[in-house]
Image 1: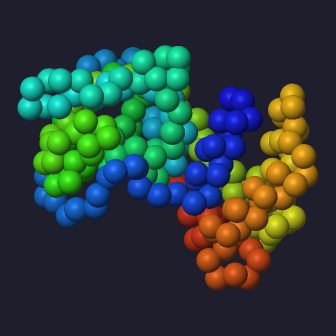
Image 2: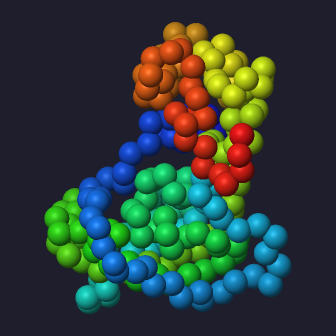
Amino acid sequence: MNLLFRLAVLLSLWGCSDAQGQTKEESTEEVKIEVLHRPENCSKTSRKGDLLNAHYDGYLAKDGSKFYCSRTQDEGHPKWFVLGVGHVIKGLDIAMMDMCPGEKRKVIIPPSFAYGKEGYAEGKIPPNATLMFEIELYAVTKGPRSIETFKQIDTDNDRQLSRAEIELYLQKDFEKDANPRDRSYQKAVLEDIFKKNDHNGDGFISPKEYNVHQHDEL
């Protein structure tokens, strides 16, 4: 992954929000999942907080018209996103849990787990639309908010992340790029992280503020 992608993932996860245009609604409806193909050898499945790489096509269930195709975006490269943090609509977060790399699924997502009563005009999705997606998962890796990453940043093992620890982590990430940014840019990234995550203003980011997306305990 290049630096621009790593930064996009890092910054968005240090201040996560709902997928664009999605509304929150209570519902008893369910996401329906049909497994089209699952590899015989599957040693790792997707979990909340994992970084996924996938292609997916979206259709309106009512008439089968296609409203989205990841293969026509970004020169046809598969999409990278973190599962379970609102990078995609709620229905896709649910539908892509427990998937193997190489697995294909067809899923039906009710409006309450998609764009609800308002719809999403920019995405050509009408109000109260049930959506259908065909998904192919390529890769599952540890996401930036995993417990492993928290421990990697927390060099003194005091269960909280200081400015110095996060700055060191960012510095190492910047150094991976062939054209490293200047120090002022790195400082701006650090300030943005603390602005979005240090909710109590104590100068540290706790496990709760970091919002670790794994079942393991720190």
